[in-house]
Image (cartoon, rainbow, N blue to C red; front, side, top):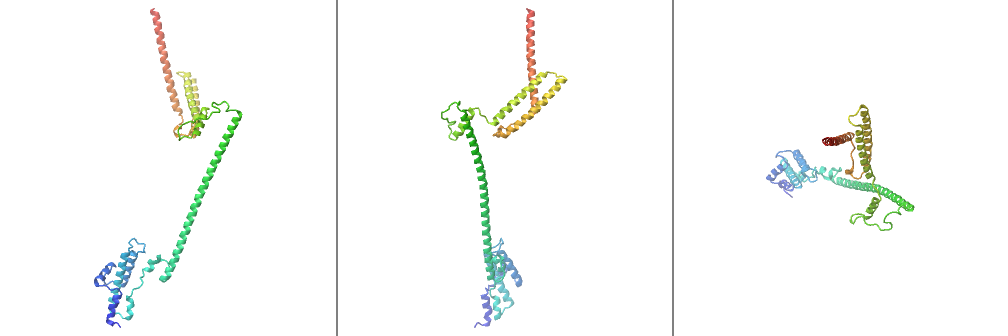
Length: 340
């Protein structure tokens, strides 16, 4: 049997009793002062546990600090129990035994479940199984969606490629039919080099010889792309219009009478209409030209009229100078005749 006087000391030893210096440090760890109530101790411990517990979502979670807080909490509880009842009886020994901490009910098992710890653990395990199943289903759904999306893109790409192949084959058949028809008519009988092998267009290994041979044959037989023909036509048209407007102005002479001015006005209106039609050809040319730097800008009626006026003035000045020189020459001849 243990003597009655020794039981309080044994209870303190079993409950984790610490010396006075450790008790003071424990109060400081819990951020409390000696003489506080049991509710203050519990509230302070819950707040610190939520802050430093490793399973909490706090940014200050630290296992070492939490262990020190838990030890300080036990020491402070033992100190408070010893101060309240310095000589506890047999029934009071259970108060100094370690109890399950209340914070674990909120911090463990991610807050899932109700009831005893064992019941909550079973509920938490079922919760984890359900959550893993949902994640697996979501992952499979994403995989299927990405797979079907990729198949749709590949199917659309295959459709475009098949259309391109069909168009190419149709063009090749058309070209082959035209060649066979021309050969049947005898259009290729008078070609130079008939029956001779084709020579390579270029010695460069990076150039397709078949493509350049075809281009050489087309060029030798006078073939030109559409945009080159349009460009040539536009240049010839603008040159013809410039010459015609200058010639019309020279016919009217200087100065112009009232009827000649009206006639000149009609000529200018027709010239503006011709420039407008030419600009439409320029638009068509810009649509088919393969090189952006080869595109053309619209012709301005005002600039073309100013250009024609300068040319006309230069021509008039040149004619007047030539007439003046001829007159001086004739006067010199007459003077020489008179002297003789």
